[in-house]
Amino acid sequence: MFEMGADEAWDIDEELDFAITDFLMQQRKNKSIIESIRNRSRIQGNLMKKFILKVLNAPWYFIPFAAYPVLALLSHNISQVRYTAGIRPLIISAA
Image (cartoon, rainbow, N blue to C red; front, side, top):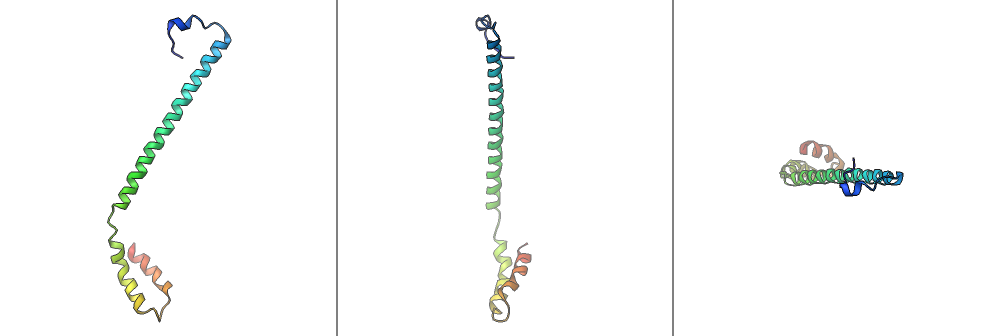
């Protein structure tokens, strides 16, 4: 229940006092729920930051190396093929 000192407990004798005590307990419980939600969102935010940093710090050099042969052939033969012909090989080589 709601903790209070002995000097305050002697005054609780009316129904209104019980209603106020229950209301205050609900507020305390709701406040702890809100704080737990905030803490959970902070944890998720930290996990998101770690994930983004992990992705940004990953080696990205392989994508230009994989794209170079496709783009070189496409640029050499641009008068004979459409540029959309290089999209599929570009995706496959980067994957």
